[in-house]
Length: 181
Image 1 (tube, rainbow, N blue to C red):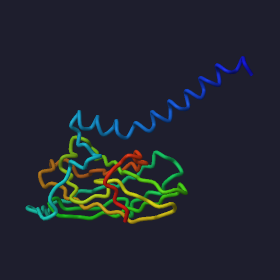
Image 2: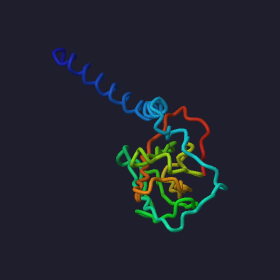
Image 3: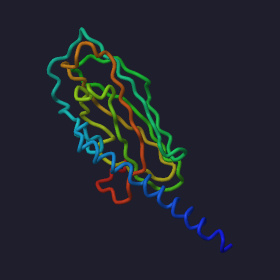
C-alpha cells in the first residue's frame, strides 16, 4: 500500500482539481463575455423593452433556430418546444422551452444563451427570458420556460437565419436572486 500512496494522492488531487475547474467554468465564461464585450449572457445584457416594436418588416422573414445543450449529462431534461420559427423583424415573438430536474435533489440552474452567427447577435433582442436569473428546481420538478424576443429590422439583408442556443448549467451555490416558480 505504501508504494501506491503517491499515486493515490495524485489521483485524488486530480479529481478535486477537475471538479474545481468544472465548477469555475460558468463564472469564468461570464467574465470572459464581459471582457470581450460579446454580450454578457449571464447577466442578460442583450435586452430590449417589450413595448418597443417600432418598424415591423412584414416583407422579410428570418428563421430562428433553437438549440438546447446540457453540459451536466443526466441531471437535466431541457428541450425547446419548436426546432425553428419564422419571424418578421421588428415584431415581438415568444419561444417556449421545458426543463426538468432529474438529479433527485433541489438545485439552482442557470441558462446561458448564445446567438449565432456571433457578429449578428446584437440584432437579437431578448425582452423576457428565463436566462436573466437563476432558476430554483425542487427534486423532480418540471417547468415550462419562455423567451420573448425581437429581431431588429436593421439585421443585414444577407442574414436570413439566426440560431439561439442555450446551455443549462447547475448554478454556483452562492447564486442570489433565485426565481422559484
